[in-house]
Image (cartoon, rainbow, N blue to C red; front, side, top):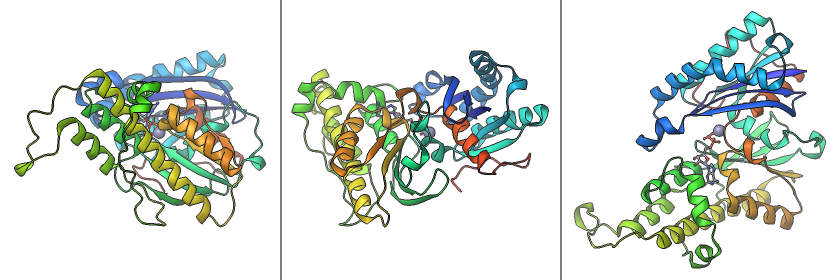
Length: 349
Ligand code: KG4
Ligand code: ZN
């Protein structure tokens, strides 16, 4: 069974053809980073326009790369929440048009849940060996932990009360004068052995003894003060903070990365203690799951805790439509589908 997935929730226009929920026949991602770079973040109206311009070409390429025809498709899945409303509407409208004209089912898929399907793509792991799972979504828009009884049954255990971790990475990169999106750039600079050795301890917010929530604003402020000095009266930064050398930039990236990873591992350990049902798996997804340090630390954590670790392949960490098609197929098999009244929504259900 072939499902076409469409994703347009933020700044990636993506389409993918997935066979039997797991096997990716084609995955096309057209990223808009070059459009948003000069603003240091995603500009919603520009994102919507770029999706509208690109969606037909992206879908056409996915069908061609998959070596199939539109009429071979058995269903259309689309990320319909959460995300930027204007951006989501482009994908949802395209999916409705295809579903109606081809006479095949339409399935609205939750983007955050789909990130937790990404690790199952191109694997043959049985769902019975995965669930119950502790799910961790770490992306530019979301940072949260879930008790996952199944791909659809998620109970939120905790999450960020301010910035998502990817957003904090992007802001850290802006403070350090790097490009956008900053996560991969900070990761690359942080990753030399010397920088890791010279890393200083930035604060890891614990939010009370048992809290499962996270906060990244203190970490971001610590980095800002390291770079620009502590502001004096009237909020003015000192003038004589000195030049930000490449070496210092690398050390600060390593320090930031270490604190961000520690915060996440700490909360996962607490979540494991708090969960009523012991999970079999640590299931991870979202752009920041591409981070080299977090991948290493999650590998260690899973080993210590005797859990199976399911991490997405690198190309399925950031936003993509294969995860939408895969989870869409699964949901369809569970008897779920939508009609043309499907609505885009900026928030999770
Ligand atoms: O999942 P995603 O594509 O979009 C959302 O659903 O939000 O995640 C994008 C985020 C960006 O903030 C980006 O900087 C971050 O993921 N990211 C990384 C890495 N690769 C992408 N953060 C840290 N290290 C990386 N290697
Ligand atoms: Zn995402």
